[in-house]
Amino acid sequence: MRKGSVPTSERILLIDISNSFTKIAIARNGKIGKIRKIPTPNLSQSKLSAFKADRAIISSVVPSATSLLKECLSLPALWVDYQTSGVALQYPKPATIGADRLANAAAAISLGRLPAIVVDFGTAVTFDIIDENGCYLGGIIAPGLATAASALHERTALLPLTRVQRINSPIGKSTQEGIRIGLLLGAVGIVREVVARLTRETFNGKAPTVIATGGDADLVSRLICSGGGEQVIDRVDPLLTLQGLFVIGNKRG
Image (tube, rainbow, N blue to C red):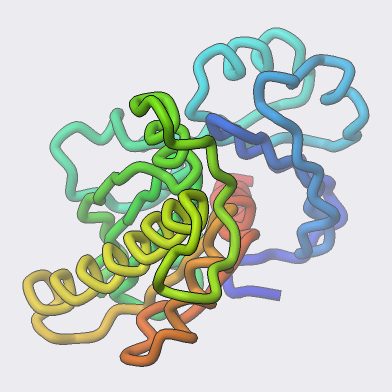
């Protein structure tokens, strides 16, 4: 059980709606249960009705899915935003921060290893920066790996749509290999540069805890570990956003 998790027999429905997929799980007795992953365009009332719970904690960055849930969900629900997250913010327009990013920040803060950087490898690659006092400072947004692969295919005449997967060499022997290598080594490079620059310019040389989450987190982290040099990612946690929702829900339960 992690710091911030409160044992309870209450069933809490955790829903994280992102652009590509929605992750849903029931938390009970201080633990997050089995996760169901549904393509966000396929969300429906019938799929949601399969989950029985006492209340819901929801993060959403998809307005149409937000509207659907507000219409069909009968549970008491806490919608995560800058006012409900409980995360201290140093940000000029806090209403523009994605709910998933606030959940990630809440989860990172609950671990107690600050300062911290959360890297979420999803439709976009986002970096969220938390200082040693647990205050959210802001972030960085770059194209996600699959998003970049799709853009290369759509904006060129001959480059094929390429699935991102493990690479075994830094030199491509086919067009698709070349694309995979470019995308993955580019991700490794941006992680290293962002962490190095923030360590130097924001954290005065103090190394932050770097937590990776999202669909491509494990792939990028393994590549960083196999490439020599400093291992800048300290932890890969595919449950981070849901754990953040649970932390927020416990504080406001």
